[in-house]
Every structure is written in C-alpha cells, then in structure tokens.
Image 1 (cartoon, rainbow, N blue to C red):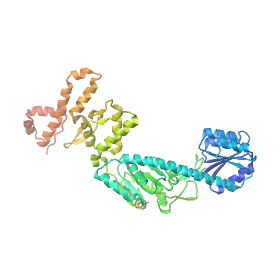
Image 2 (cartoon, one colour):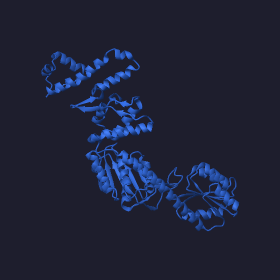
Image 3 (cartoon, rainbow, N blue to C red):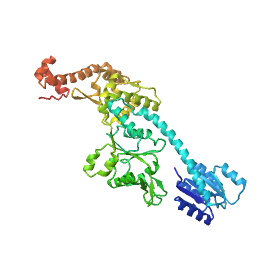
Image 4 (cartoon, helix red, strand yellow):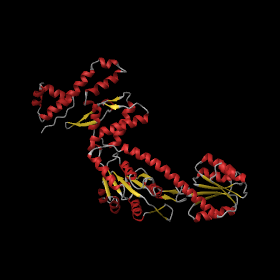
Amino acid sequence: MPINNILVADDEESMRWVLSKALKKKGFAVDLARDGDEALRFIRTNTYDLAILDIKMPGLSGLELLDRVRELKSDLLVVIMTAEASMKNAVEAMKRGAYDYLTKPFDLDVIDAIIEKVNRAREMTSQVTLLKEELKDRYQLEKTIIGNSPAMREIYKTIGKVAPSDVTVLVQGESGTGKELIARAIHFNSKRLGKPFIALNCAAIPKELLESELFGFEKGAFTGATERKLGKFEQANGGTIFLDEIGDMPIDLQAKILRVLQEKEVTRTGGNQSISVDVRIVAATNQDLEESVRRKAFREDLYYRLNVIPLRLVPLRERSEDIPLLVEYFLAKICAELETPVKRCSPDALRLLTGYGWPGNVRELENTIKRAVILSSDPLLTVADFPGLRVQKGGEMVQSEELSLEGIVDIKLRGSFTNMEKMESGDVYTMVLEQVERPLIRFVLEKTRGNQVRAADILGINRNTLRKKITELGIEVKRD
C-alpha cells in the first residue's frame, strides 16, 4: 500500500510550513505537530504511514517519541531530523528503529527519495506477503471446491476458459452454493495472481456506508472522517474485486459502478480528483437480475456490463452425488479445527444427508455436520445425530428417525446412559412398530388409491383396525 498519510513534528514553524506545503502538493495528507506531546496524541488517535520527527522538541524528544511509536504502532515508519550532524545522534536513531536519518538543512528531493524508497519496499513486502497468502489460499481452494458431478465439471471448464482473460463474470446461484469460492478460483487462475483479491458483500453493509466502502473518502468528508481512507476499488488495484449480492446494491450507486467499468476510475467521497484503477470485477447474486431489470430495481446497462460471462451454480440438491465427498471433506476439516479424532458417518446417516434437500446448500451442510461433530461423543455419527432432517421418500416427507432401526435403537441407547428403566420398559418395541406401521400403511393406501377396504385386505387386518391406525398414526388418506 503506498504512503498516503504523513505526520510532521517540529517545533520550528518554518520547517513545518515548508514540509507541509511540499508534501500536500504531491497529494499526501499531512498533519502537523508543534512538539513531541502533540505528536504522540496524533499518533494515538490517527493512522499514519510515515512520521517525520525533529530530534529536539519541547516535551518528548524525537528519540523518546520514537520509543513510544515502537510500543504503540510498530509498523509506523519514522524518519528523524536533526540540526546536529553527530554520529551519536545518527547511531542512536537507527538503533532505536528509525527508518532513516536527515541532517538539517536538507533538500526536499531527499524527502521524495525516501518516500519513493519506502513505497518500493512496502510494495515488495506487500506482494511477497500477498503471494504467500494467495498461494496458501489457492492450495486450500483446490480442496474446498468439492465435486465430480457433471454440473461441477462444467463449472471447472468455464473457470479454465474465462480466468486468463479480464472479462467481467456474473456468478449466479442460491445462497450457500459457494459463489465466493468460484470468484477466488477465477482470480487464482488468472494473470492477476499475486495482486489483491478484495471481497465485499453489498447486502451486509448499510446503504449509507456502502459508497464510502467502495470508493473511500477524504479526510473531513463527513463527521468522523478523521483521516483519508482508501476504498475497496483502490485496495484491489491490479487485482480482482468480488461484489457479492450485487442485486442488493442501491440503484444510485449502480451508476457509479457502471462508471468504474466504463472509465476505469473512481472518485473518493468528499474528493474531486479521479483516480485510475485497474481492477477486474467478478459479481455475484442470488436474485433473478433479469426480473430486477424488468422491475426497474437494477440498471439494464449495468446488468449487460456485468453479464459478459454468466456462470450459474446449481443448488446442492441438484448435485446430490457430490454430498458424500463434501461430507468426508467437512468431517476431516471440522475435526481438525476442533482438534478431535476424525469422525465418520454411518451408512444410514450418509443416506439421510444425501437424500435431504439442503435449502441452505453447502453452507447448511457444513453447519449441520459441525453441529453433529460438536454434540456427539461417539466416533460414528448416526441418524440420531441429525435430528429434524426430512427427506423425500415414496412421495412423502419422512423424518430422519423413520429411516432406520439403527437410528431408533441409537436414540434409546443414548437415553439408557442416564435412565436404564427406559430400556427395560420395552418402549423400543413399541417405537419400532410405530415406525414400521406408518410407512407400511401409507404405502398400501397409496397403492390402493385410498381404498381402505382393499388396503385392510392386503394388510390382513380388520377395516376398523385400519381406521384406528390411520387416526393414531396421523396418516393422511388421499383419494383419487
């Protein structure tokens, strides 16, 4: 990140004036302190990229202030100025952590050279750090985009085709389908790898703050703007910005996004200077943007600008063959995070998870597995560890407890740890009979199209008994 905010502390008004004028002319935001104590107050309340401190000032000296800076904000770069060109001062300043040392009087070109050197060093450090993080993220990403279904294979192919270019991509899909993972995959496989990837959820930020988050603001632009702040577009310069839930963006702000796409420049809130940005945009939404355009809730021109490459993620229920792989991945990941032995799912539990509709998609699946891992003390997760899940079975929605004897017995076994009388009472027998009877009677009634006389005959029971069972078990009889 280049230097933006500079603090100058010197008891000589002429020196403060000269440095302030020269630095502001070059576009820097500058605060001026008359002594060490005032400079310390500035440092405590504001954020600076560089501090230029005189060594001799009333109150705290430059060297004493340097010690305080190292305690408070160790990443703040400090340049020490002095009128006494002694080796002792120079050695002491550098020993205490000063970035550089200047002897008065000095040419302003020396300040320019120091700032340029700092910017180069910060950029290199930032790029190395970013590259390490992105390579780490990329390694993790290859693990977290899970799936071998035909739908996912098509997604992989599309990523491979669009990633190398700079075209805008619109990722569409329900909440929880992994739209940000896809955006990151596009970035990590592009020529922008090593540059920033900045993500912003447009629905998570209040409308009145969203503009300043995107474009930044100048110091004094509004109450509380005590210093200049770079927006997400400037932070993403050279890289990729991911605008999640763009369908929730206010209509007036959409026009400014369109301008960024067309002109490749932004203007900070409270500023009047256009700033060039080189950013690739990947947008995402869980809404039907075409419908939003028809309702005049989304700009048509912006929609077509974003929708150069549409990429639609299918919901998890439409790629259920990937669920076993996802379950295996999440179990390993969650157990590692919780530092517990790796757990696994019983066949019945896996069938339950695979058959469930997952309205919250992959995110809901992960949270469900995490809850089961935390609450279960057993190494094997069974149907009983996923209470409340319902699956489609024979045209009916069936509770998880109906799916297997394993789940029923497991529930009772767990209860027996605290109450042995429950097992001795024989209620497992009754419970199993109820679980078998309900789906059996439903199935026969479905096959006989609700004809209770025929159903009773097939079941080998009296018609009055059948009616009683239908009432007791709460079975809905559908007649053609």
